[in-house]
Image (cartoon, rainbow, N blue to C red; front, top):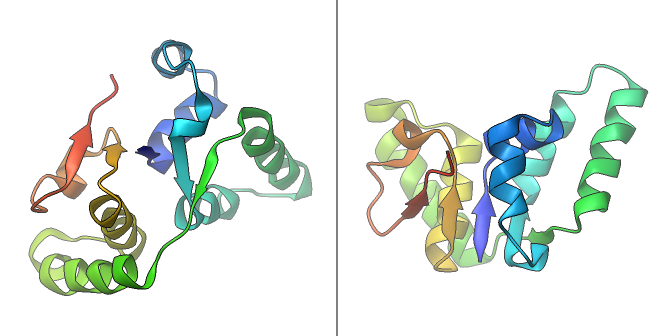
Length: 128
């Protein structure tokens, strides 16, 4: 599975050419996972109900798979946060997202390489 970070989804929702081309090359959107944290991150950016519903419609239109954290991924996310928050400025959502990606052997699709490149056993994909 490919677990997609918020930055890439924001680009797609804004129809940025590079993001559109990246997703056009994927035949089966069920291999694309979106974590609960990533959904919350996008929903948090809504400034009114219209934007909130547009974001919900965006997720429904693409039919991405939900990537829910397991107990193991949550524990690993806490380990990542504890280890890397002060040294690298790692945020809560990024640490939990990395925990899901590592425990599910998923490839994390992000443009924010600097947020994740220090995490062992994390497979990153820089889409564009």
